[in-house]
Every structure is written in C-alpha cells, then in structure tokens.
Image (tube, rainbow, N blue to C red; front, side):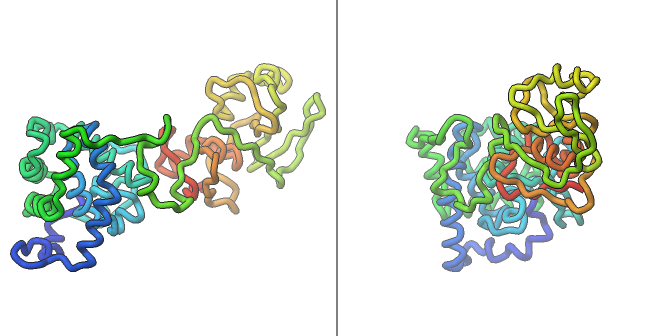
Length: 339
C-alpha cells in the first residue's frame, strides 16, 4: 500500500496526539475532502458493508486529502498496487521498493469502487466482514493486521482521523437508513455531480451505441469498386466509405473476400449492417499509426474502435500500447498512444 515505514518520519506531526498537530489549512483541506467524498463512501458502505468512516479515513491518509501525486495524476486514493489480477492502466512510483506499480483510475469514484472490491474480494480481509459494521476500531486494527499498510501506527492514524472528524456519523446515517444515494439516470455512475469537478476533461464518454463518422482527408485514392466507389488508403491500409444500410455480405461479395474478414478487420462484432460514411477497411489494419501520429485525444462520443478506424491501427494493439481492454471507460481529454 501507499503508506510504508519509510514515510513514518514525515507522518510524525500526525501522530502527536496530545498537541494541536493540524494547522488550519490542513484541517480545512480534510474537511473539504470529507465533504466531497462522504456520499461515495456511504454508497460503498451500503453496497459492500465497509464502514464509511474507515473508507474516508483511508482516503484522507493514503491520498493526502486528494493532493498526493498518485491521487492527482492517477485518481488512486487508496494506494492500491497493481497485483497480478489488475488489467487496467498503470503508473510507477517509489514506495516500499523502487518503481512499484500502482493502479490508475479514470475518476476518484472508480478508485473508491475498486477499494471496496479489493477488500470484499481479498481473502486476507475476509475476517473484517465478521466484525460489527460500526466497529471502526476493529476495522482499523484489522486492516493493519492483514497487511494493508506497513506503517506501524496505521490503525492509530485511521482511528485518530475518524474521531477528530466525527466520521462515524456517516456510518450511523447508513445504519439508520437516513442516507439515500440517488443515481442521475440508468447507465450513469451514481455520483453527486454537484460534488464532481466541472472540468470538461472529466466528463464520461459514451462508449457504445454512438457512431461518429469521419472523413480521412489525406487518404490516397488507389482504386475503384464496380459500383464506382473509390478505394482509398490510410496508413497503407485500403478502405472504403460505406453506404447507409449496406450489408456486409453484399460488400464482401463485391470485394471477393469473406464477410467474416470485413467483420474482423473493423471490429463489427455481430453487426452486419453498415452506416453512411462509416470507414470500412478491406484488409488488416497495422500495429501502429503513421509516424506523425503519436497520440489521439479523445473527443465527445468517441470510442477506441473509432480511434482504431481513424488511424488504421488494430484495436488489440491500441489496448496493448495503453494498458487498456474492452471494459476501459474513456473520458474526454484522455490521450491514447498510437505508436
């Protein structure tokens, strides 16, 4: 985990219980963090039976009130490392050892959800769920015992935060049924938008059911189909623009190739009807983009499939270059590596 023994010296001010160790700025920063994430912590408590007080205290400590480099650049609020089962994006920081791998999230709430799953699915944390859900001291000591962090006084630090900031009030709200988390609409994340940054770069991209047509202006014409349509070349890969409602089977017959080849080259899945001006490759795409295209910045409505077609780069290559998979959630402003 993020907090290790070598950070002990830097945390000494936090551990001086009998003096006023928190400056006014530190206190305000912590209060702001709590106000921002308390609803998400209570939602996680409802769904995963982890005390909201514990979740918030860990978030405060592990992320430095959301101001640590790992939290700001990678949205990782709990110092969770990659481990063997992690298939998402990664970043590397010095912790217990040099250059350790940490998980990267698309948003803080994704980090909170993964933290819940990490504890709920981890065998070494199973005994914690036998504790009373309001037993924050038992949870704090149990996390330390299970090895969540190497800091010797980790449990005491969590307990101190919980008691100083009255975080148990959020446990009680959930237990007494006074907390109701409202999702904005089906398919959207259940997050309070009034507490989320308004920055456009954090807005989620619709990753399915949206088609954004492109015209590749610099594509070279290299031939014609029998229906007088031009065959063009992008990244040394031949393609055409589809016509509205055109059938994959009819197009394959015209080209003299199998329909499954068109499906495979364009990641069409089960779809067999094409859309107007849809880019359709008629031979395999390449493993990387042309030299002048190193990155693509995600715009509203785009998917990785769109990026794959725009640059004639295989989707599996994009996954590999960016440590992503078909379940990765994109956001406006994400930079996708192409080479």
